[in-house]
Length: 303
Image: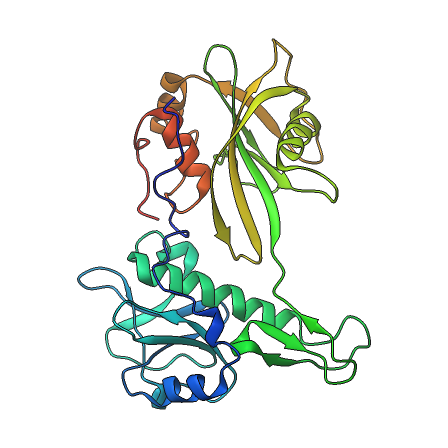
């Protein structure tokens, strides 16, 4: 398998300068919002207006066409254009239809993929964290949408990000370990993943999750890349690991319905027979599997 970091991750391609120093500069923010060249991304329940010809692209609007409500500074491009996000009814724009990250995240260009990922993450956070965890008072957005402040006790609350490790495990024969969760369709398989626990390093989390889920100890844990997964609030950290010795798989029935080792030929045959559906390129899991496989999988969907 090729060494080195993953070169392309669908949701880690943002190109804007997030200009965090301007988030508390009210004068700069008002000037930017008043600029007719500023563009606004409207999101509603994780979806935004998308045009699909000639290729998928976000349909952005000027500030005067944005719905009323809180707005979030998403960044500034190399030409000085400012971009904001807001939540509300999607504007009616000819030639567009609503699209979410699962559907278009891998198809959008670099700028738009970053914009939608950022805005979806902030929309979910604001919707889910309206009240102060200390006193229950409704909080108010601040810092251009990147902080919420309690007016009662003055406490500041920041967007939550949950780190999760996802790991491609191989054995001494360079076979890949794939598994299916209890709630998944019968033809879905993926690599193992799990959340990092308090007081735990990323490498420890990889080893613990593999041992808990399939009973296999691993070694040579190596980091290859990360991407945000704001569905709802994770950061996926991708690793490879090598199974330590010839230990039989022992799936935890609460986490894993079945697990098995696959050679490249076996995986290709399973996909071509329809026993396994190839993952789309959106997830870091797909990119790790493709790295091991040596290229695109058979019958890969576009997203």
